[in-house]
Amino acid sequence: MISREEAINFLKSTSIEEILNKLAQINNKFKRDYITYSKNVFIPLSKWCRNRCGYCIFREDKPSLMKQDKVKEILLKGDKLGCREALFTFGEKVDENEQIKEQLKFMGYDNILEYLYDLEEWTLNNTSLLPHTNCGILNYDELKMLKEVNASMGLMLENASERLMNTIAHKHSPGKHPKLRIEMIENAGKLKIPFTTGLLIGIGETNEEIVDSLFKIKEIHEKYGHIQEVIIQNFRVKRGIPMENYKEPSPIKMLKVIILAKLILDDISIQIPPNLNRETGQLFLLAGVDDWGGISPLTKDYVNPEAEWPEVKELREWTEEVGLKLKMRLPVYDKYISREWLSEKVYNKIIEMGWLKE
Picture 1 (cartoon, rainbow, N blue to C red):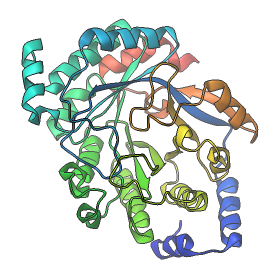
Picture 2 (picture 1 turned 30 degrees about the horizontal axis):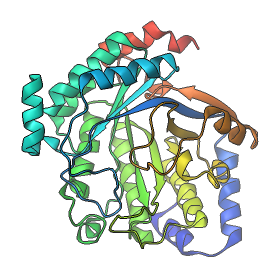
Picture 3 (picture 1 turned 120 degrees about the horizontal axis):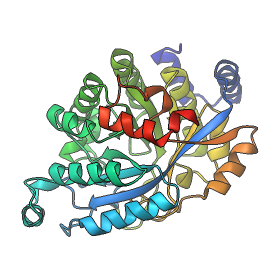
Picture 4 (picture 1 turned 120 degrees about the vertical axis):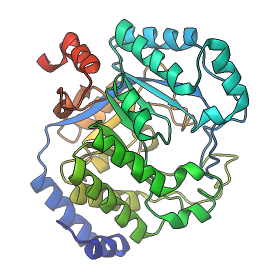
């Protein structure tokens, strides 16, 4: 176990020896044979959002909804390509937009979550894909409803610091308040929902705030045990965003944060986005990363559209070059595939797929 003070000092240190010592510590303690990934389709039901984050290019002012026929077309194509995760996302609180409300009403829905539920239930009934929802802040009852049709859910903590609410990153984003996000992650724990969260590195946070955020995730997981993976995501500059002139985190900074994440979070899987770390991803495997996250043979990364997904062949080459094997997973990790963690509907679907026999 590493203390808060030791972790902060490590991030501030310029000692190569400290990095090498901690890499040795990780590789002595955490034995791995496989690096996992999820093969998915990315379905952005709407790109309108109440938040205007300083680093975001996903949000669009146009309040439109993806129609059912288009969604089903993507799902069926993804199924044929061997995808097993349907990643559903949309901007936070899209129901606040009157035009979207009208579109939903025209289709016979009172709100976006009714529409989402129907699409996810259709996914379970008509494909071999399992839904995973990441759509911003949801309350306890909303999470409880969606658990019925989701194998897992997610929400990036990004950072636990309230100070960032007064910076260019989050000053126009009420849904990024850490209290709201922590509350949702805890509610998911109370409901036993297998969950993905993570940090966004390079948005103006301090070393202390990075460490405190990792310990906050650890604290929540120790209480509920539901956090299956933590993403360590690097800020990437995009043309036209308010933070266009911000500096991206260096590879060494990312390496050190990943090292700390593994040492602090212990049995939680650590994931990095492979399309944002093409040049450095292999090196991060040496620091305890054990999951490449979701990649798609069909849909792009709408959050980072400039960064193409690697193909499975590339991931396999990257993985095998460091002596490990690549293994596909579901959006829910194997250790959470039980009636304790999944709804009957989702659990029975996984059994029907024969996944546990693989």
